[in-house]
Amino acid sequence: MRVELAGRNILAQGVHLGAADTDMMAGADGPMIHPDDVAKASLAGVESGMIEVLADDPARFVKAALAGDPSRLYS
Image (cartoon, rainbow, N blue to C red):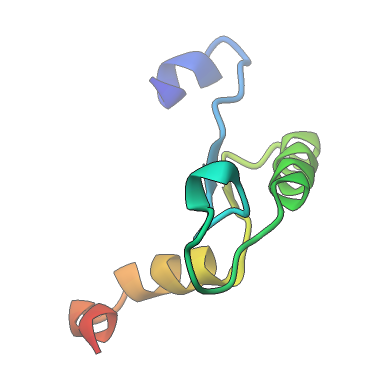
C-alpha cells in the first residue's frame, strides 16, 4: 500500500516505539516514551519525508537487531 500511495505523492509513515506512557500502559514497569514525544518525532519525520520513524531506543534496538543474528533478541 505504501508503494501505491507513494505513486500518488502520499506519504504513508510507519512509527515504531517501545512503550508509551498512556492509560493502556498504566501499571506497567519500565521506561516509556511520552506520547507528545512520539507525535513530535512523527511530525519531524513527515517534514523530512521519512517513511519510517523509530521514536525511542527500544524501537531502534529492535530495528538494528532484526538485521543481525536473531538470537540477540532472546538474550
